[in-house]
Image (cartoon, rainbow, N blue to C red; front, side):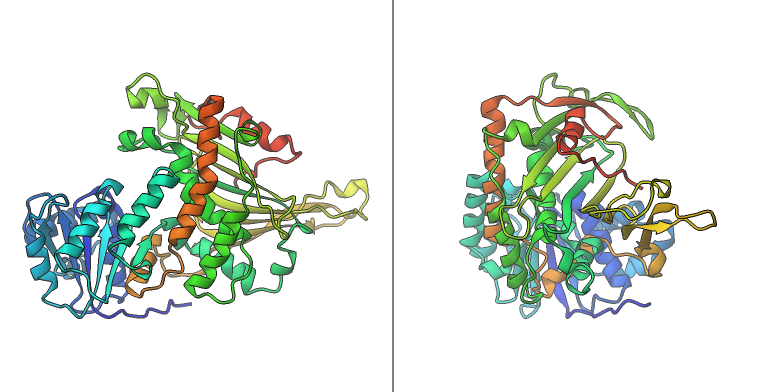
Length: 491
């Protein structure tokens, strides 16, 4: 089955932070892959912008090295790379002064009719400065969009301030708040499974679903993010955006269409229905953890405090939450969320656990009947598994076995599975906001997370140690097992 590739009209993509880590690892390879797929048309331009003094050729050399490092060897073909590099330009721009802005304007004014997108691959402290200078230097047209990366604030008040600052320059329909998890194939397949099949949606409620688990586990530690991470922690870094967005897609009501506003309206209703977690219940429904020295597949690894080289920190590198949604569909169905660094393996998945059958007609010799599960794997090896009971083949009576109906995207579809950024970058050009967060979504998510942060501070809830290379602290196991359930074992 071949993918349908729809070319987009020529555009200009300006990447602020164009020499940074995100541009090197994700944005440039993503745009290169979209060129290979035939979606970039002439004379599309990609313009790097940062403080570094560099000319166009210097930036092309930077991009060449980035592609060499981050593309598989069989995808790095000189002819294709050179064709892509010809699209690249560079302007040295200072976000906090007027240096370089007239040069950027002159470059963009060569094609004022094109869609122009400004990607802010920089820290949120610069969002306001860059937005204001884009406006003051006359770079905004009717075809302009701006893309902002997380974190959108570090609490509700800062998120509101940031949204207000950007909103004073750009209209809401021009602002694309990106969460790359929403661009993953399996996330969108969740909507296809629910709303394109008669099999699941009639069962997608508290009458048939026992609970839901959402796990986003990382095997890496701090890497180069120590300064940011120790001020943020797992709740701000992962839960407030990635896990909450996944929860919304699992729990939302069927939208009237796949139009952006229809989808985002339903997600907002879920956010506003989340049961508050405050100092009254935080100890019972949340667990904070911090990894200590242990081992990974590559051998021994340091603990968090050793990596920090700071000695003392109460920042959580792991969090588990029992979330509840106070609405008709989900009353009584817990959503167990967990995320952490230095865990046993890198994996992101959603597990929908159905209720057990009410009565077994099979005798004790048939074996234990395990409840059905739908498992959606986001990474690695994206795919979907439906766990069911079948009869084990062979004579000698009825023996039941728990097996999975397995659909691996890599096995089922011959084409390469695009990275999430590839889809999202071009959704910006197409002005499709379905997979991006609206202002009120971001603020509603913070409205749920903020009381948790306050509760942890007021109650002094400690971080529980866990050994690197495990699945987190034992208290996270107790959190779910107190309810007679257990975390899904990866398979």
